[in-house]
Amino acid sequence: MSMTQQAEPAVDTPPAPGPKQTDGRTRQRPLALRLLARPEVGVFLGAVAVLVFFLFAAPPVRDGSSMANILYQSSTIGIMALPVALLMIGGEFDLSAGVAVVTSALTASMLSYQLTLNVWVGVIVALLVSLAIGAFNGWLLVKTGLPSFLVTLGTFLILQGVNLAVTKLITGNVATDDISDMDGFSQAQKLFASTFEVGGVNVKITVVWWLVFAALATWVLLRTKYGNWIFAVGGNKHSARAVGVPVTFTKISLFMLVGFGAWFVGMHQLFSFNTVQSGEGVGQELIYIAAAVIGGCLLTGGYGSAIGTVFGAFMFGMVQQGIVYAGWNPDWFKAFLGVMLLGAVLINLWVQRTATRR
View 1 (cartoon, helix red, strand yellow):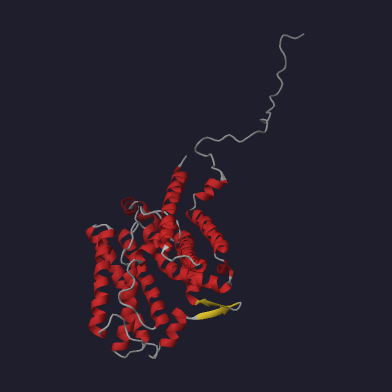
View 2 (tube, rainbow, N blue to C red):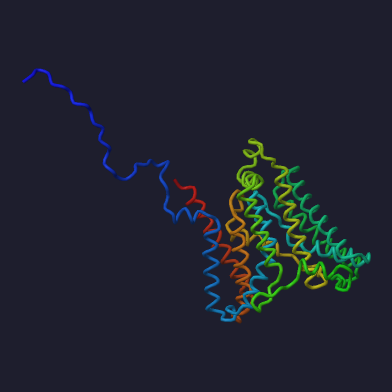
C-alpha cells in the first residue's frame, strides 16, 4: 500500500431542503395581521356587522328604496367627510366645516335672489367664498403656528354669527327666499340634486358623486406625489420640510379642499330644498370628523384612508336611518354614534400598535 494516496476531488453536496432561515428583520407577519393593519379593513368589518344587525332588527331596510335612502344619507355625510379625512391625515382638522356648508348655500341663494342674477353666478361666487374660507384657515394656521382647533373654532363662531346676522339683515328672516323659479335653477338642480332610477328605485345623484370623489381621493393618496406630501406633513411636518415637502402649500390646499366639499354639499342642500335655514350646520362638523375617525383616520395625523372614510359615513347613514326603520326612539342615534366612535378609536389604537410591532 502506497504511503501517499491520490486525493479525490471534493464534491459539493447541496444542503438538505428545509425551512428558510430568517432573522427578526425579515420575518413576515401573518396575513391576518397585515390585513388588519390596513385602516379600512376594521371599519369595513364594522360596517358589515351594522348592516347585518339592521337587516334583522329593521326588516324595512331590506327594501331597495330604504337602502337608497340609507345611501343618500351616507353620501351627504361622506362627500364632506372625505376632504375632512384628507385634512386629518395631514395632521389637522376643521371645526368650521359644518357651518361653512350653510355659508356656501346662503351666499349662492341670497346673491342670486337679491340681485336677480342667474343662479350659476351665485354658485360660482359661493365656490370662491368657500375656497377663500379654507385658504384663510390654512394661511392663519401656518403663519401663526396656532393649533387648528383654535383657528377653526374662531372661524366656526364667526361664520355662525355672520350666517344668522346677514340673513336677517338682508331677508328680514332666518331663512332665504325660494329660488326655484330663477334662471339656471333647473340646470343646477340636475348637477347637484337630481334623482335617477335604477331597477325601479330612485337614487340621488349625490351617491354617484360620493363614490366618484372617494375614488379620486383614493387615487390621490396612493398614486400621486401630493398624496405622499399629505402623509408626510401629517406624520412629521418638520421632517417633511427637511426633505423638500412644501408643507405650507399642502396645509393650505387641504383646508381649501374642505372648502370645496362645503361648497358642494351646500349647493346640494340649496337645490334640494330651494331655500336655506341660516342656523343650520352647527354640530355637523363633529359628524364629519367622527366619520373620518371611524374610517381609520388618527387625530394625530399621518394615517388613514379615503375608502375607510366611505365605510365610516355608511355606518352613520345606516344607523341614522336604521333606527327610524326599526321604529326606535331616534334619541338613541347619538348614543349609537358615541359607541361607534369609542369603539373605532380603540380599534384604531390597537391597529396602530399592531402595525408598528416587530
